[in-house]
Length: 439
Image (tube, rainbow, N blue to C red; front, side, top):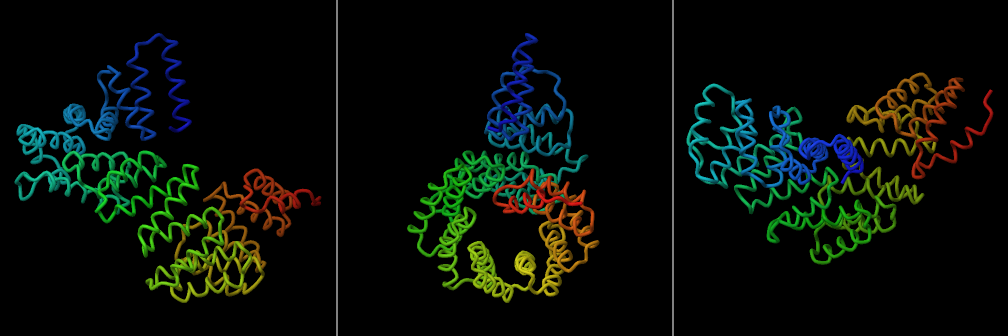
């Protein structure tokens, strides 16, 4: 559970106890905090313990989320009815209300909806439950329609369905209609994985049928997540076991190589990237793996092999912003091919204008070319976008120093020192710069 959430929960309970209030008000407040941290089980417990009355629409919607996402459909349906008395256009409430009616063979809720849909725009609910104005009889067909809504919403950045609470709500509703919907278990697991709730993610991954194509992918994800739970050895062992039991599965080999690369075991990573590169793979994947292997060679100070991999990667995909950026920045740091690097970085920036990493490289290229005013403007923009990037702050300090703005340079270097981590590899140079007396 999130440390901040635990702290807030404790403070709330202490405060309420001191006021000698009944259990209900503290429970409701804790439930709302739990929802903000996607802790639906905790929220469910405290909503049950609360007897708060006259809830507004926002509080009712949170309560709906807690009950649906903990598979308590009957309770959720009761809350949905309350929401619909306030807001007849609430499509989540309609979906819960109608699914509960479908599972309990109740006709009245559908009759209510038929009257309401003539006045309100309820297209999502209509798509889920109706086919040519006829109620769908097959629960699995309804579940499939819900799943299609979720898939569409996850690919559409403009829709409110991207909210994880509601994505999980709709996916949970799918499972009420079809308990064998493996794709839904996978989607739910991925959402919890993105929320860094790895234990919950594993619970849903484990529900996927062993014969389903997503089964191996799920086991791979469980293994990878163990690394983020500070169990690197178990992650490595599980991936190796999967490789041995699924000979020729390149996705698992890549996962193991990526695990080694991300944990700085570069020689092992190179070994596995090379194994995959020696097989018959498509060109896009080959370009990506050459880039990843190149990074490993570069970190091992084998620049000749790294450069060869980066160039070969660009031969396949000349527009890869990441590869253009990495190779150009490496050349700049070695004071090589500055003009060519600047062109490459301009191209990378055009391809990926939102990347502050590429913008940093572009600014640094201008610094190396002695275009100091352009460099300072670009690097200041980097700091605005990513104010906590120690390397970029260090770079801006160097640019200010070259412009004669020594007081500002020292300030930036001090800020960079406060933020720098050992893996940034700038602490020693920052210490040296800060120890010098700059008049």
